[in-house]
Length: 256
Ligand SMILES: Nc1ncnc2c1ncn2[C@@H]1O[C@H](COP(=O)(O)OP(=O)(O)OP(=O)(O)O)[C@@H](O)[C@H]1O
Image (cartoon, rainbow, N blue to C red; front, side, top):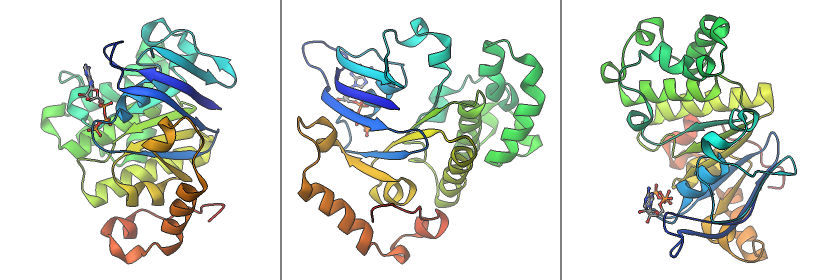
Protein backbone atom coordinates (compact mmCIF):
# COMPACT_ATOMS: atom_id res chain seq x y z
CA UNK A 1 0.00 0.00 0.00
CA UNK A 2 1.18 3.52 -0.84
CA UNK A 3 -0.22 5.97 1.70
CA UNK A 4 0.16 9.72 1.91
CA UNK A 5 -1.10 11.11 5.17
CA UNK A 6 -1.53 14.82 5.84
CA UNK A 7 1.29 15.84 3.50
CA UNK A 8 2.30 19.48 3.56
CA UNK A 9 4.95 20.36 1.01
CA UNK A 10 6.27 23.10 -1.25
CA UNK A 11 9.23 25.28 -1.98
CA UNK A 12 8.97 27.75 0.90
CA UNK A 13 8.16 26.45 4.35
CA UNK A 14 6.22 29.62 5.12
CA UNK A 15 3.94 29.19 2.08
CA UNK A 16 3.50 25.50 1.22
CA UNK A 17 1.69 24.69 -2.01
CA UNK A 18 0.28 21.39 -0.71
CA UNK A 19 -1.47 21.42 2.66
CA UNK A 20 -2.60 18.31 4.47
CA UNK A 21 -3.00 16.04 1.44
CA UNK A 22 -3.96 12.40 1.99
CA UNK A 23 -4.52 9.56 -0.45
CA UNK A 24 -3.84 5.85 -0.77
CA UNK A 25 -3.08 3.56 -3.67
CA UNK A 26 -3.42 -0.19 -3.14
CA UNK A 27 -1.24 -2.69 -4.99
CA UNK A 28 -2.78 -3.26 -8.43
CA UNK A 29 -5.02 -0.22 -8.10
CA UNK A 30 -5.07 2.75 -10.48
CA UNK A 31 -5.93 6.10 -8.95
CA UNK A 32 -6.38 9.31 -10.93
CA UNK A 33 -5.69 12.70 -9.35
CA UNK A 34 -7.46 15.68 -10.91
CA UNK A 35 -7.04 19.32 -10.11
CA UNK A 36 -6.65 22.77 -11.64
CA UNK A 37 -3.33 23.97 -12.98
CA UNK A 38 -0.92 25.09 -10.28
CA UNK A 39 -2.79 23.55 -7.33
CA UNK A 40 0.15 21.32 -6.38
CA UNK A 41 -0.54 17.95 -8.05
CA UNK A 42 2.99 17.55 -9.41
CA UNK A 43 4.49 18.53 -6.08
CA UNK A 44 2.41 15.87 -4.33
CA UNK A 45 3.27 13.32 -7.02
CA UNK A 46 6.97 14.05 -6.49
CA UNK A 47 6.54 13.55 -2.74
CA UNK A 48 4.84 10.20 -3.43
CA UNK A 49 7.71 9.14 -5.71
CA UNK A 50 10.32 10.05 -3.06
CA UNK A 51 11.60 12.93 -5.20
CA UNK A 52 10.54 15.81 -2.95
CA UNK A 53 10.77 15.83 0.84
CA UNK A 54 7.55 17.08 2.47
CA UNK A 55 7.57 19.66 5.25
CA UNK A 56 5.28 17.47 7.34
CA UNK A 57 2.99 14.47 7.13
CA UNK A 58 3.79 10.84 6.49
CA UNK A 59 4.41 8.63 3.48
CA UNK A 60 4.01 4.93 4.21
CA UNK A 61 5.13 2.14 1.92
CA UNK A 62 3.47 -1.12 2.90
CA UNK A 63 2.97 0.34 6.37
CA UNK A 64 6.62 1.41 6.77
CA UNK A 65 7.14 5.17 7.15
CA UNK A 66 9.53 6.64 4.58
CA UNK A 67 12.24 8.61 6.36
CA UNK A 68 14.48 9.68 3.49
CA UNK A 69 13.85 11.18 0.08
CA UNK A 70 15.76 11.55 -3.20
CA UNK A 71 19.27 10.09 -3.26
CA UNK A 72 19.14 9.55 0.51
CA UNK A 73 16.25 7.08 0.22
CA UNK A 74 17.27 3.41 0.34
CA UNK A 75 17.75 1.96 -3.14
CA UNK A 76 15.01 -0.63 -2.64
CA UNK A 77 12.51 2.15 -1.98
CA UNK A 78 13.73 4.41 -4.81
CA UNK A 79 13.61 1.63 -7.36
CA UNK A 80 10.11 0.63 -6.28
CA UNK A 81 8.89 3.72 -8.21
CA UNK A 82 8.71 4.38 -11.92
CA UNK A 83 7.93 7.99 -12.78
CA UNK A 84 6.90 9.60 -16.07
CA UNK A 85 6.66 13.37 -16.31
CA UNK A 86 4.76 15.64 -18.65
CA UNK A 87 7.68 16.99 -20.64
CA UNK A 88 9.98 14.24 -21.87
CA UNK A 89 12.60 16.71 -23.11
CA UNK A 90 13.16 17.99 -19.58
CA UNK A 91 13.65 14.50 -18.21
CA UNK A 92 15.81 12.98 -20.95
CA UNK A 93 19.56 13.45 -21.25
CA UNK A 94 19.92 14.92 -24.78
CA UNK A 95 23.26 13.12 -25.29
CA UNK A 96 21.86 9.61 -24.89
CA UNK A 97 20.49 7.43 -27.67
CA UNK A 98 17.03 6.14 -26.78
CA UNK A 99 18.41 2.69 -26.12
CA UNK A 100 20.79 4.12 -23.48
CA UNK A 101 18.08 6.35 -22.08
CA UNK A 102 15.89 3.31 -21.45
CA UNK A 103 18.81 1.34 -20.00
CA UNK A 104 20.00 4.18 -17.70
CA UNK A 105 18.37 2.82 -14.48
CA UNK A 106 19.64 -0.73 -15.16
CA UNK A 107 23.20 0.55 -15.52
CA UNK A 108 22.80 2.65 -12.37
CA UNK A 109 22.02 -0.48 -10.34
CA UNK A 110 24.81 -2.54 -11.98
CA UNK A 111 22.51 -4.69 -14.16
CA UNK A 112 24.34 -4.20 -17.49
CA UNK A 113 23.82 -7.88 -18.28
CA UNK A 114 20.05 -7.34 -18.47
CA UNK A 115 20.24 -4.34 -20.83
CA UNK A 116 19.85 -5.93 -24.30
CA UNK A 117 16.90 -8.18 -23.46
CA UNK A 118 15.09 -5.69 -21.30
CA UNK A 119 15.47 -2.78 -23.76
CA UNK A 120 14.21 -4.96 -26.66
CA UNK A 121 11.25 -6.16 -24.59
CA UNK A 122 10.27 -2.67 -23.48
CA UNK A 123 10.81 -1.06 -26.89
CA UNK A 124 8.25 -3.49 -28.24
CA UNK A 125 5.88 -2.87 -25.32
CA UNK A 126 5.88 0.90 -25.85
CA UNK A 127 5.96 0.74 -29.67
CA UNK A 128 9.50 1.92 -30.47
CA UNK A 129 11.08 0.42 -33.59
CA UNK A 130 14.82 -0.49 -33.63
CA UNK A 131 15.73 2.45 -35.91
CA UNK A 132 14.31 4.88 -33.32
CA UNK A 133 16.34 3.29 -30.52
CA UNK A 134 19.55 4.46 -32.21
CA UNK A 135 18.45 8.09 -32.32
CA UNK A 136 19.01 10.87 -29.79
CA UNK A 137 16.15 12.91 -28.28
CA UNK A 138 16.42 15.78 -30.80
CA UNK A 139 15.97 13.24 -33.63
CA UNK A 140 12.58 11.94 -32.44
CA UNK A 141 9.13 13.39 -31.82
CA UNK A 142 7.76 14.24 -28.36
CA UNK A 143 5.53 11.17 -28.52
CA UNK A 144 8.43 8.87 -29.43
CA UNK A 145 10.56 10.37 -26.67
CA UNK A 146 7.73 9.93 -24.16
CA UNK A 147 7.49 6.26 -25.19
CA UNK A 148 11.19 5.92 -24.33
CA UNK A 149 10.65 7.71 -20.99
CA UNK A 150 7.85 5.28 -20.16
CA UNK A 151 10.10 2.34 -21.06
CA UNK A 152 12.79 3.81 -18.78
CA UNK A 153 10.25 4.11 -15.96
CA UNK A 154 9.35 0.42 -16.35
CA UNK A 155 12.85 -0.98 -16.81
CA UNK A 156 13.43 -1.89 -13.14
CA UNK A 157 9.94 -3.41 -12.82
CA UNK A 158 8.63 -0.87 -10.28
CA UNK A 159 5.80 -1.74 -7.92
CA UNK A 160 4.41 1.79 -8.14
CA UNK A 161 3.97 3.98 -11.20
CA UNK A 162 3.55 7.73 -10.96
CA UNK A 163 2.42 9.26 -14.26
CA UNK A 164 2.39 13.04 -13.98
CA UNK A 165 0.47 14.43 -16.98
CA UNK A 166 2.19 11.72 -19.03
CA UNK A 167 0.02 12.27 -22.10
CA UNK A 168 -0.80 15.97 -21.78
CA UNK A 169 1.23 16.97 -24.86
CA UNK A 170 0.35 13.97 -27.01
CA UNK A 171 -2.23 13.10 -29.64
CA UNK A 172 -5.03 10.59 -29.11
CA UNK A 173 -3.32 7.60 -30.67
CA UNK A 174 -0.05 8.09 -28.76
CA UNK A 175 -2.07 8.64 -25.57
CA UNK A 176 -3.87 5.36 -26.17
CA UNK A 177 -0.61 3.51 -26.89
CA UNK A 178 1.03 4.77 -23.69
CA UNK A 179 -2.01 4.06 -21.52
CA UNK A 180 -2.21 0.57 -23.00
CA UNK A 181 1.49 -0.04 -22.28
CA UNK A 182 1.00 1.07 -18.66
CA UNK A 183 -2.08 -1.12 -18.26
CA UNK A 184 -0.36 -4.16 -19.82
CA UNK A 185 2.50 -3.70 -17.39
CA UNK A 186 0.13 -3.37 -14.44
CA UNK A 187 -1.85 -6.43 -15.47
CA UNK A 188 1.26 -8.59 -15.57
CA UNK A 189 2.97 -7.19 -12.46
CA UNK A 190 0.17 -5.98 -10.17
CA UNK A 191 1.77 -2.55 -9.85
CA UNK A 192 -0.23 0.35 -8.42
CA UNK A 193 -0.65 3.59 -10.38
CA UNK A 194 -1.11 7.24 -9.46
CA UNK A 195 -2.02 9.14 -12.65
CA UNK A 196 -2.05 12.93 -12.32
CA UNK A 197 -3.84 15.10 -14.86
CA UNK A 198 -6.44 17.68 -15.84
CA UNK A 199 -8.29 15.44 -18.26
CA UNK A 200 -11.23 14.01 -16.38
CA UNK A 201 -12.48 12.01 -19.36
CA UNK A 202 -9.14 10.26 -19.74
CA UNK A 203 -8.64 9.63 -16.00
CA UNK A 204 -12.19 8.35 -15.50
CA UNK A 205 -11.72 5.86 -18.30
CA UNK A 206 -8.17 4.89 -17.36
CA UNK A 207 -8.36 4.57 -13.59
CA UNK A 208 -10.29 2.51 -11.03
CA UNK A 209 -11.17 5.73 -9.23
CA UNK A 210 -10.50 9.43 -9.69
CA UNK A 211 -9.82 11.78 -6.80
CA UNK A 212 -10.34 15.53 -6.90
CA UNK A 213 -7.76 17.84 -5.38
CA UNK A 214 -10.30 19.29 -2.94
CA UNK A 215 -11.02 15.83 -1.58
CA UNK A 216 -7.37 14.93 -1.27
CA UNK A 217 -6.49 18.11 0.59
CA UNK A 218 -9.69 18.41 2.60
CA UNK A 219 -9.46 17.60 6.29
CA UNK A 220 -12.37 15.17 6.00
CA UNK A 221 -12.85 12.13 3.75
CA UNK A 222 -14.71 12.67 0.44
CA UNK A 223 -18.30 13.66 1.08
CA UNK A 224 -21.23 11.52 -0.01
CA UNK A 225 -22.20 14.30 -2.40
CA UNK A 226 -18.81 14.22 -4.13
CA UNK A 227 -18.80 10.45 -4.35
CA UNK A 228 -22.31 10.57 -5.83
CA UNK A 229 -21.14 13.09 -8.40
CA UNK A 230 -18.23 10.85 -9.31
CA UNK A 231 -20.35 7.74 -9.77
CA UNK A 232 -23.06 9.65 -11.63
CA UNK A 233 -20.44 10.98 -14.05
CA UNK A 234 -19.26 7.46 -14.72
CA UNK A 235 -22.77 6.07 -15.06
CA UNK A 236 -23.98 8.65 -17.56
CA UNK A 237 -20.75 8.87 -19.43
CA UNK A 238 -21.23 8.86 -23.19
CA UNK A 239 -18.35 7.02 -24.85
CA UNK A 240 -18.87 8.56 -28.29
CA UNK A 241 -18.29 12.06 -26.93
CA UNK A 242 -14.51 12.08 -27.26
CA UNK A 243 -12.14 10.46 -29.72
CA UNK A 244 -9.86 9.23 -26.90
CA UNK A 245 -12.71 7.06 -25.66
CA UNK A 246 -12.56 5.01 -28.80
CA UNK A 247 -8.86 4.44 -28.24
CA UNK A 248 -8.54 4.02 -24.47
CA UNK A 249 -10.45 0.93 -23.40
CA UNK A 250 -12.88 1.55 -20.55
CA UNK A 251 -11.80 -0.11 -17.33
CA UNK A 252 -14.37 -1.75 -15.16
CA UNK A 253 -15.18 0.32 -12.08
CA UNK A 254 -16.12 -2.12 -9.38
CA UNK A 255 -18.72 0.03 -7.61
CA UNK A 256 -20.15 1.76 -10.69
N1 LIG B 1 10.68 24.31 -8.16
C1 LIG B 1 9.75 25.18 -7.76
N2 LIG B 1 10.10 26.26 -7.03
C2 LIG B 1 9.16 27.14 -6.61
N3 LIG B 1 7.84 27.02 -6.85
C3 LIG B 1 7.44 25.97 -7.58
C4 LIG B 1 8.37 24.99 -8.06
N4 LIG B 1 7.67 24.06 -8.74
C5 LIG B 1 6.38 24.42 -8.68
N5 LIG B 1 6.24 25.57 -7.99
C6 LIG B 1 4.98 26.26 -7.69
O1 LIG B 1 4.19 25.38 -6.88
C7 LIG B 1 2.82 25.50 -7.25
C8 LIG B 1 2.29 24.11 -7.55
O2 LIG B 1 2.98 23.61 -8.69
P1 LIG B 1 2.71 22.16 -9.27
O3 LIG B 1 3.58 21.99 -10.46
O4 LIG B 1 2.84 21.17 -8.16
O5 LIG B 1 1.17 22.27 -9.67
P2 LIG B 1 0.28 21.37 -10.65
O6 LIG B 1 -1.03 21.25 -10.00
O7 LIG B 1 1.01 20.12 -10.97
O8 LIG B 1 0.20 22.29 -11.92
P3 LIG B 1 0.01 21.88 -13.48
O9 LIG B 1 -1.29 21.12 -13.54
O10 LIG B 1 -0.04 23.20 -14.17
O11 LIG B 1 1.19 21.03 -13.88
C9 LIG B 1 2.75 26.47 -8.42
O12 LIG B 1 2.33 27.72 -7.93
C10 LIG B 1 4.17 26.53 -8.93
O13 LIG B 1 4.46 27.79 -9.47
